[in-house]
Length: 224
View 1 (cartoon, rainbow, N blue to C red):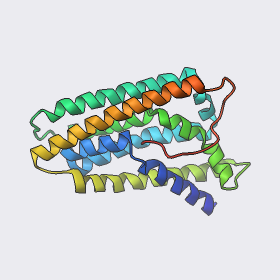
View 2: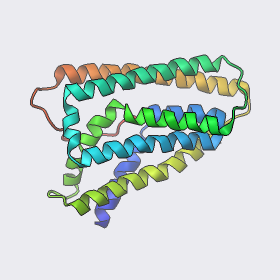
View 3: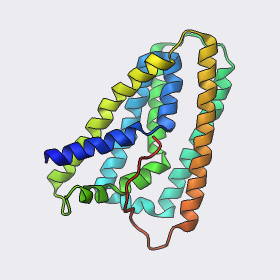
C-alpha cells in the first residue's frame, strides 16, 4: 500500500508541476495579490482535480472519451482561456489599485476552479488512471487500492498548492507597476497560446479518434 501511495504521489507532483493554464493564472493573480491570491488559484484548481480524479477512478473517465462529452468540455476550456487572455491584456493597460483582499482571493479561487474543471487535457489524463495503477502492479484494484491511490494524488496536489504559491510570490510579486504590467502581458500571451494549442489538440483528437476507442492506455504530464 505504501508503494502505491508514493507512486500516486509522484504522479500527482508530475501532473501539478507541468506548466499550463493554472500556473499562468497563479502567476497573474500572484503578481498583483501576492501569496494569498496565488494560493487561492491553486486551491480552486483542487476542486476540478479532485472531481476528475474521482470520476476517473470510478470508471466514468472512460465515458469522457466520447465526443459528445469531450468536445463540449474542450470548447468551454478554450473559450475560458481566450477570455483570460483578453482580460489579462486589457488589465495590463490599467493602473492597478489595491483591491480588497477578499475580492481578489474570491476571483482567484473561482478562476482556479473553472480552469481545472474545463481543462480538456484532464479528460485524457484521468481516463488513464486505471492504466497507471496496473503499471505499478495493481491489476485487480480493490476499493482500498483506489482510496490509497486517490489519497496519494490529492496529497501531492495539496502540497503543490503551497509550493507553487510560494514560488510565484517570491519571483513574480513586485510593487513596480511596469513589472506587473509586463507579467500580465506575458500571461495574456501564454493564455492565448494555450487556447490555440488546446483547440488544435481538440480538432486532432476528434478527427482521428476511432469510433471504438474507449480508453487511454498511457499517461503523460498535462498542461495544468
